[in-house]
Length: 119
Length: 112
Image (cartoon, rainbow over all chains, first blue to last red; front, side, top):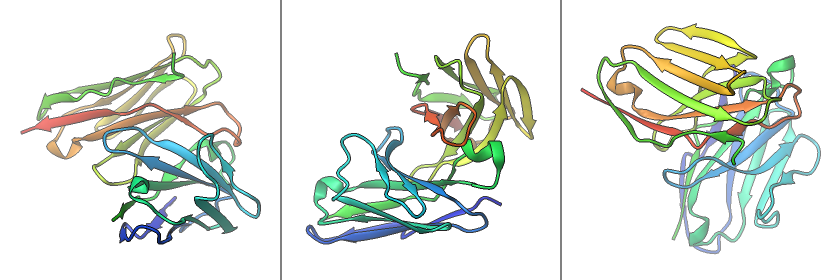
């Protein structure tokens, strides 16, 4: 149980285009999903918390118009990197917690990550 | 001082060794403690979680929490080259509204 699927796993795009990354909880419902960014050999950097049916909460310094998050259902959240530029190239990872697991809501389950390369 | 401190390593050990990975923390409200394993260019995979103090064992892995010292450990017995990865600790207070605080991860290399 507690499987999170993320895709695509790798995307290459031209500068100025937009890229959408999907995150799905396959066997549980997730009222909250999280989006992280990770640079090589560095830890996870929380970008935003995605809440089903409401606006995402962005961390300080993360541009909400640049990184659009939609959490339209209890099993799907999407991150769209708009007008991507080479500096947006990074590893993006989503995670989800099981809304129905009581005290275990604090446990996050991660997707496999998406490597974005902007040319 | 960061809320969670974790030595980034790298920690290099021979195959078969017992590995000890550690994190210290400053927030006494933390009750949930998690260990994740992350292979290169993959998402973190949950290895174990514990609630409050004590030990928990799962195969070759043992998680230990010492709340009085604000110190948690992950032990790996009979380490294998396939254990080579980055290990992240994470912790949070109780209550579903808290986002776990992650350590920066320790890079482990197990050489044959």
